[in-house]
Amino acid sequence: MKKLALILFLLTAFVISKGQNTPFYKDIQYFKKQDSIDFPPKKAILFIGSSTFTKWKDVNTYFPGHTIINRGFGGSSLPDVIRYVEDIVYPYHPRQVVIYCGENDFTGGASAEAVVERVGQLLKLIRKKYPRIQVTYISIKPSPSREKYWTLMREANARIAMMISKMKRTSYINTYDAMFNADGNIRSDIFLSDNLHMNAKGYAIWAKIMQPYLINR
Image 1 (cartoon, rainbow, N blue to C red):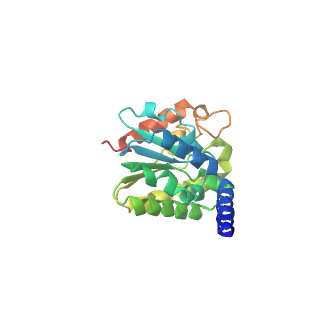
Image 2: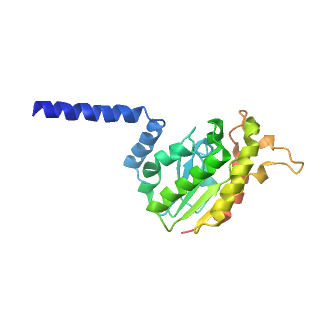
Image 3: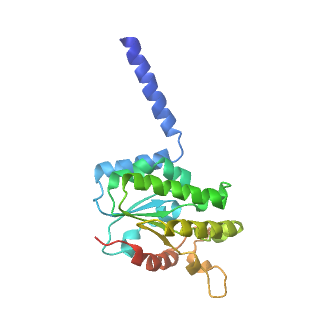
């Protein structure tokens, strides 16, 4: 009996240790801790993805009348969001899921085709749990610090938009074009000094474009 208890203890310790070494494990545990203190209401709009959402700390002020649950975690790519979909999507019973992710995939060496396939996989996983809710994907943004990936980003955006156009209850939001001036140059005034993340002016541009796509109660 003692031997069995020891084996179970060691197995449990191994599983916990392995989980802690998984990328973004601490971020997910933080979300779970938040939920244990004050679980978000059902039928909210759920934001998932990478640091563009993580850093949108005051997102609810941009969309009065909507309840936003923000579960973006910084540095994540699509495989990370896919890995944790049961933790960051399934528990919340949202009326809509809004996704911003894919930009970091290119810095990891992914092709446009791979990004499109990953988006498709994520959409399927969300549909597995919630077949009838609205799911919305926001175009990959042209961060100045990642200009060398813009061609791949445009290709991925176009292919994702085409894929989504054939899906029910799924929409694509093009914020990419609005981030350029009329002369075709990127708007430098909408980014922080890192030329990667947006400032309040950038988020205001996004919010205006996104507003018509958000589902009311």
